[in-house]
Image 1 (spheres, rainbow, N blue to C red):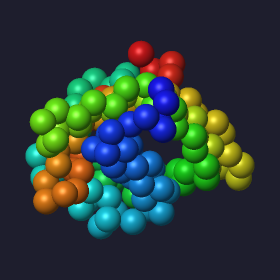
Image 2: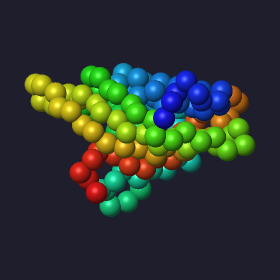
Image 3: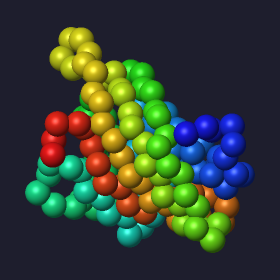
Length: 132
């Protein structure tokens, strides 16, 4: 996917995806909570069922492994009527693991709602490769 040929709304949405990855690496749960819609729901592949907003916040909180670096590869970015966005992408992340680090590869499909000019995440599905 050529990021140089995105429309304005698509580019803003992709920037939001990247910003949320940067934000999650800070473990700032207040800012992560603000980035999620109040009715957020998601489902990580391999888990028995969906999770809610507070579970998503906890997943990037201080007790979770810190993301040391990451790379994102967009596969599809669609904006519907300027207010709903869906992003499909693959990721590679280097995360803390004990006294060292490990590489995790996976994919996400994320859905967003644009409210007051901000993209709020409303849903996510995916996760690390190998958990299907």
